[in-house]
Image (cartoon, rainbow over all chains, first blue to last red; front, side):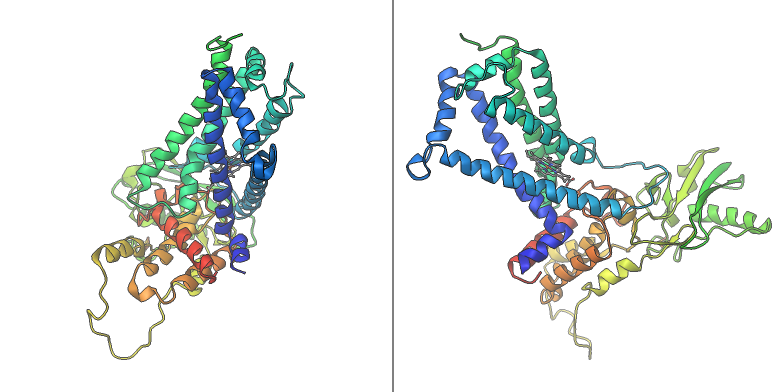
Length: 226
Length: 248
Ligand code: HEM
Ligand code: FES
């Protein structure tokens, strides 16, 4: 079957990485906007958490929609990692003898840290879910009270530093990843190249900035209301 | 110019290989890199040694036969082939490291010469147009829009030197394959076999054991024909279309 042949090819594996990456980019952008509701106030961000659970509940039941999203995201990240692993094996096998020294002309720090950066993002993801969704490593977690959970968590500067670092790594992954995704999906062309690079750079800078603004604001006491 | 060369020497495919050091004081800034190697070889021969084996043919940048990695960059990084690289790019007293293309599908035959038949097999898989021979067709029987012929020519200039593979951190042959596919897939004569060509050439590329493309762009940075990354986007697009059409 054609789809199986695509999966077998190195290009097809990249297409799977691009599509799953695209799903996550979409999610990450929405997640960031949701977080910014913190600046509107406790009712706004707590209401958003409630909305995510009541959305579509007539058909899917309470939290049903949220579970569909979670299922899609988990499948996407697992596929993304599996393809990254398989391609990395093929890539390394193709260069069994290394050069005595390499001088890179166009590879960037971002493009060269996709693999280790990806692993770090995965570890962060696990930590973040235990911290803010499950709540078992949170000092004082309260179900469906994101405003409270955030304000308590980010009083701790160590947490803030860790979250900021993770968002910088995410930005680096997206800096190469978003452009690479457009190239893999065949959207790129000679005249579009510069524009697509700028789109990728904008996403890679604005998304982490949006995320970082919240822990920093809380640490500095901005917008914190009792 | 006084130069010290660290050159990869390897008797044959089985030999492990090692770097050996040579010096010369006879290099001149106006010499090509290969003329400089010729002088070093003359010296080695005079002393009864085995000259450094390196590939070359036209020495004017059009055949794609030459190519070594110079100081960690295929073709030395001045936008030319190795044969068109001039010694004025180097400093007096410099130490220059010279290595062969490194990729599993490019086994070293001797010293700096590698076997690039893997690229030929990718061409055999679909890098052609099937046409019945006979009397020459009318010159303007098939009209080609000017933008298409320009774009096709920009990809057709690939000389198949393999620097893209050598430069790629993944040892990928995507830029080569993409240039060949994009060239033919842009022209009306290439349309009947467009999707089978794309699928078959990609399948052969993978079968040869080249790595995957991660879009670092190292390939295009060293390409003496200046093929750009849009070739790869075209290849990806046509492979996706081939899949949707059920050809791949
Ligand atoms: C363990 C987790 C992860 C690993 C190991 C990983 C690894 C990789 C690797 C190796 C690539 C290919 C690099 C290249 O083409 O140069 C890649 C691409 C990409 N990643 Fe990740 N990644 C991970 C998580 C994520 C997450 C959470 C997101 C989304 C926020 C993401 C978004 C992307 C995108 C958009 C691409 C571009 C796909 C393409 O080139 O077509 N990745 N990742
Ligand atoms: S020898 Fe022909 S391109 Fe260099």
